[in-house]
Length: 228
Image (cartoon, rainbow, N blue to C red; front, top):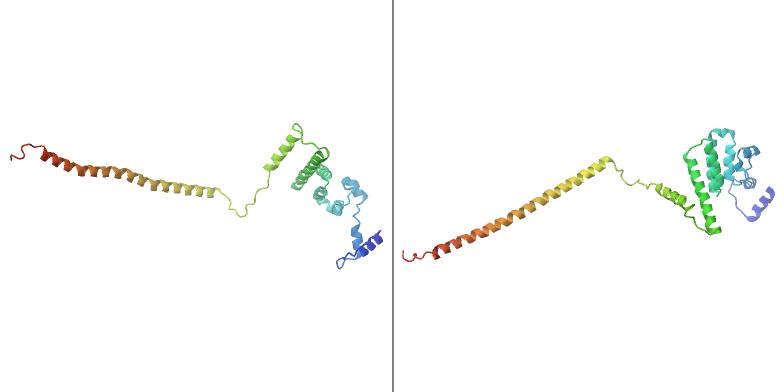
C-alpha cells in the first residue's frame, strides 16, 4: 500500500518541502488508528476518519491526560459539529452533562449542535417534503427561539466610546440646568423693558399736548378780555 502511494506521489510530481521524506508523507496519508479499548470506551469514535478528531480521541485515551479528559471530549464534540455531525456532537455533549460536566464550551457545543440539527430538519422539510412550518406545532417554538436569539445578540464594541458613569450623568445634568437658567435670566429684562417703555411714551405725548389746549381755552372763552 505504501509503495503504491509513493509511486503515485512521484508520478503526480508533487514537490514536498525540504526535510520531509516520502516515507513520512506516506505515513501521514494513513489515518490514525485508535486502540480497540479506546474505541470501546468512546463508541462515538468508531468509524471516524478525520485525523484531527482521531488525534483528540487518542489524547483522551492517554492516561497522562486524565485531568484534561473532559476538556478534550468537549473539543471532540466541537470537531464533530465542524464535520457536519451535529447528532454525534449533541450526543457527546449530553453524555458529558450526565456526568455533571459544566462549562461555557460545552454550552456552546450544545447550542451549535441543536441549531445544526434544526437546520438539517428544516432543509429536509423545505426541499424534500416541500412544506412550511405549521402554525400549531413547529412555528411557535421556532419563533420563540428566534426571539430569544435576538435578545442575546452580541454586545456592540465600545472600545472608542467613553464609559457612562453616574458622575458623567450628573455633570451633564448640571450643565443643562446652568444653560437653562442663563436663557431665562437673559430673556426677562427684554420683556420688562418693552412693557415699561410703552406707557412712558404715551405720557410724554399727552403731557406735551395738554398745555396748548389750556392756553387756547383761557384766551378764547373770556368775553370781557377786550374791555380791560
